Each structure stands twice: as structure tokens, then as C-alpha cells.
Length: 200
Ligand code: GAR
Image 1 (cartoon, rainbow, N blue to C red):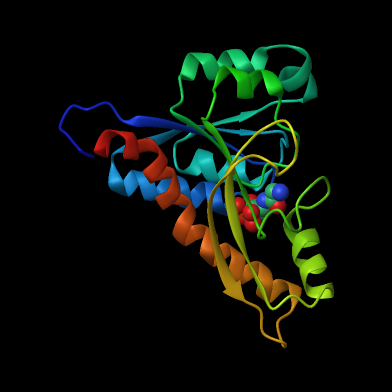
Image 2: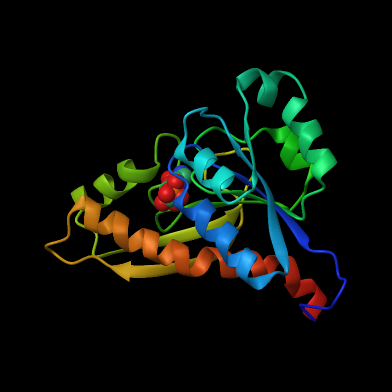
């Protein structure tokens, strides 16, 4: 059962590095649903638009540096206090630390703007992915949502869906198609992960 009066909301924490349109979409989706809430947005980039978007939607917006993520346990300790049900990487470009993955097994997921295992790995993010896909004259692309492990884009797949590439499509057209898929499916996949065990 998904919504019961007085049932505590599931907690989502988002990590993002830049624009944050997915983060905003996820925040708004669960604001409407009321079953879960994004309790914080973390960014490695102090000037990232995602922090402004979170702040404007009254979600805690936090910036961290390499030291806080990798060398000390500052970010890990903040997460432990927040007790998230799911940690969502939505356009997060740094390697996610092993110690956090270990502390939250099967609770860290990522979205990738291509059909993994193709077009994944270090350096494959955002427009770089779409450019490579156009150069290879692919006829379709899509999105992949997967669990995060200690290798870029190699964790177990949770969900994929595709979209066709037309001969006239530019890199921007592909990016737009991918974003539309992400906006439609990412919140629903998150919702399913948060609630499916309760439906069983
Ligand atoms: C999204 O398309 C996401 O799939 C991609 O970055 C974009 C972020 O957009 N992630 C990666 O490339 C990770 N390798 P947004 O900041 O507007 O949500």
C-alpha cells in the first residue's frame, strides 16, 4: 500500500553536479505525490544551478568538496544522519565513493543518458554521450537507470527505454529527447524502488 495516513515519507537524497533539471523534476513529482520527499540535494559545484533550484523549492541544498567526500567522512556522516531510503545520482559527475555505497547497499542509483553498456565510462556524460552517438550514426538511443558500484556506469541495470534518432537530429535534439524520457521515467522508477517491496 502506498499512502497511509501518518506513514512517514520515504526519504530521497539527490547528488547532482550542474543544471539539475532532473533533480527539480523529482522534487516536484514527490511534492505532488506526498509519499516521499527529497530531503537534500548535494552538489560538488558551488555555483551549480541545481543548488538554486533546490533552494527555491525549499529543499536543503548542500555543497561539498573533494576532501569532504573522499578524504574525510563529512558527507558520509551527513547522509547517515539523514537516513535516506534512496540516494539518487542525477547528473553527478564525480566517482561515487565506495564507503558510501557500502554503507547504503542497493540504495544508490544513477541515471545515464544512453543505452548502457554502450556509451558509458569515464568522460561519458551529458553532451559528450550525445555527440558520440551522433558520430556513430546510431538509429536509437535511450536512458539507463542502474545501481551504482565502484566502476563508472557498470552497476546492475534497473530500467532502460529507447527513443529513435532521426537523420536530421542534432546533438541538441538528442539531448532534448533524452531529457523528456528522463523526466517521464526517472521519478516513476524511483517510486517503484521505494515502494515495490511494500506492495509484495
Ligand atoms: C542527464 O541527462 C543525465 O542523464 C546525465 O546528465 C544530465 C543531467 O541533466 N548524466 C550523465 O551523463 C552521467 N554520466 P540535468 O542536470 O538537467 O538533470
